[in-house]
Image 1 (cartoon, rainbow, N blue to C red):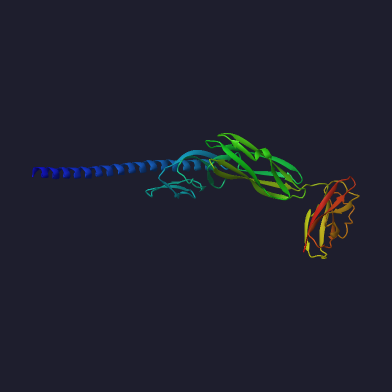
Image 2: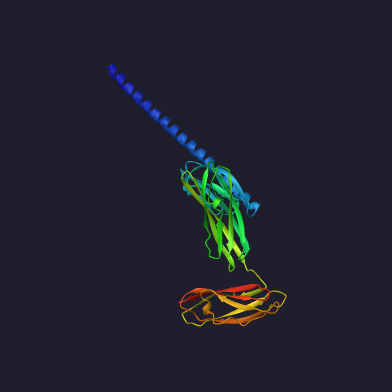
Length: 344
C-alpha cells in the first residue's frame, strides 16, 4: 500500500514539475519574443529617424544635394506594408505595429525586398527627395548637350562599383534617331570593375545637317553580380541648333504629300544674313525625286539682311522619295533645302 502511494506521489511530483517547466519555458519564450520585438522596434525607429533626418538635410541643402546613409531593416519587418508615402516613411513589424516618421519634404522610393543592412541614397531634385540604392552609381544624373547641326560632340560619364565584390558591366545604346546618332566607344561596352573602381564611358553625338530640335534617349548600363542583373539608365538629350550661314532657305525641310500626278505648291524664302549683297545665285536639284520639281527658282540675288520669296511647283510621281534644292552663289558657298515626297 505504501509503495503504491509513493508511486502516485512521484507521478504527481513529475506532473507538477512538467507544468512548472512548461510555464517557465512559456515565460522564457515570451520574454525572448518580447526582447526580439523590442530590439527590432529599436532598429526600425533608428532607421526611420535616420531617413527623416537625411531627407530634411538634403531638402535644406537645396537642389541636387545628396546624402548617403547606412540603414538596417529588422528581420521581422513586413516590407510589403512598409514604405514611403508623401512626407511619411513607415516600417511595419511582425506584431503589426508601425514605426512612422514624418519629414519636411515629400519622398519617392521604396524599401528593398529583403531585410538587413544596406546603403541608402537620398537626393533632392528641387521637388522631392528621391530614395535609391546603388550597387553601382553614375557621377551625374543625366547628360544634356547642345550642338550645331552637322557637327559632332564627345561626352563622358563615370560608373563606380559601390558593391562589396566584383561586377561585370554591359553598356548599350538606347538612343535611336535618324538625324542624330549616339556612338559608344567599343572598349566601354563591356568591362569588369572591382569594389570601388571607376570606368569612364566615352560616347559621341553625330548630327545631320538637317537635324533641328531636341533628341532624347538613354544609355543602358547593366551590372551583373552573382547571376543577378541590375540595369540603370543614363538619360541623354541633345539639342541641335540651326546652323546659320550667310544664305538660308526656309523652310529647311519640307514634307509634301499627295497622289501621283498631283500638282502641289510650296512657298519658300531665301534670306541673306550677311551685311553684303549676295549675287550670282545659281540653282541645282538632286535626288530620286528631283524630277518632281517643275522648275528651279528664278531668284538670282538677295540684298543684305533681306529675303526673297519664291514658290515651287511640283508634279508628284508614283513613288515616295526625297529631293534637295541647292543654291550656289558667287563666292562658291552653297545652301540646301530638303524635300520628302509621300506619294500615294
